[in-house]
Image 1 (cartoon, helix red, strand yellow):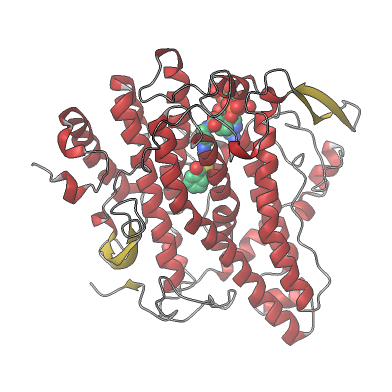
Image 2: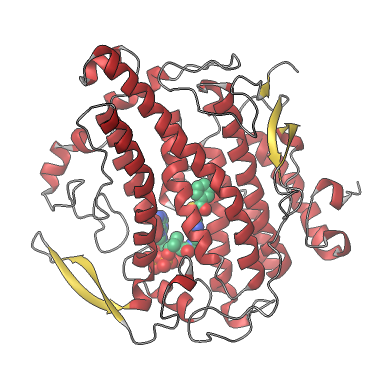
Length: 475
Ligand code: BYC
């Protein structure tokens, strides 16, 4: 069956005139749809959802709102507009023209990065697939589906690059992106966080706050790439990513708001009393932050990484907002990073800036994570309670890098393995915490109504009222 590409796959890559690419995508698209049906959101596939669809990259077209059934969503392919005479912004070839094709010597390294990025997108959809059954409101249900279809689009974005620039290897990798599955024993997703279950909404909001923000920072690094089609693809993905982090930040804010209201009403901060009243006590929220933040720390790779040094030197992957750094070449410069001293303390170690790129990106990410935390702490202080939410130390619960396997408290103090296991439930969600959070998850789908553990949002989507029927359940 012939597909009208302009209609079916909105794009700005002149898809209609590229036969080879069309054939490759024709082959891949039905597999994607099968995957979506099997491992995408469970239920609601025939419901009309008030979704934003990108139909072009300009201000008018990138956010077109309307009622769409998810399987009919138009997963488009968009690259930000080409910057004329763009030059390489960092590394050994600083100032030379960027590449419109993949240089042969960087083929496998670029493919690896694109595959790793691409792998996270369907992974997150798989992780979130059952959440519709327990949504706290129609507004949240719609936001979940918006995030899911856009992660699907981000998969298309990476698959486009694989098909258009990496020949047969790229086509095989595109197939494999649909074969690995989140949490699978035999064929899991590539990065650790993307194999963690997200089967309740507290974790969904944590994921969209912390993990989507990792996405923002990794995309910012790739948006600096000398491989221009990758840079332009990631630039456009970043515009959509902002909504995902908004979902996370406002979700956590609304949970805190509701808890504070009950704390004020009942004049208590006692977790048991608050749990009985059906809200999430702040220490539990903190333990979920400890879990998700530490999981995301690993997504930046090792503190000292030869992979990162090579991709920086070769202009393949830069630092977020590379222009804000003074030295874009960093050939012989050094900086200090914290490493374990082997006897329970911290030692400062001098390493080449290029080898410590992952750590620099991680630090920029942590500063960004703090913005929401500061806002939440202001809410708590304003309500008159003495509790401070803290981001754990980047040393806490690491599985990758210099601190991998070294037991520490969330504050980053090295402790014995025995103490860590004894204090596990103080630092991280316990079985009982998880049971409690699960017990709160009851589906609420009456327009405008909210589950008891979360406050209503301040405003709706695209100027629509909060009680708008964002997901039409008849049909
Ligand atoms: N789990 O030299 P190293 C997003 C591997 S999220 C398991 O330290 P490098 C999104 C690593 O692959 C953003 N393995 O690290 C969010 C390497 O393996 P190989 C995703 C891990 O290469 C929400 C080895 O350890 N974007 O978009 O400098 C929803 C040594 O690595 C992990 C990207 O990932 C881990 N956590 O940096 C939807 C960008 N960490 O090759 C979407 C593309 C490291 O030796 N990827 N390893 O077998 C990259 O830039 C890099 O691959 C990484 C690692 C930053 C991930």
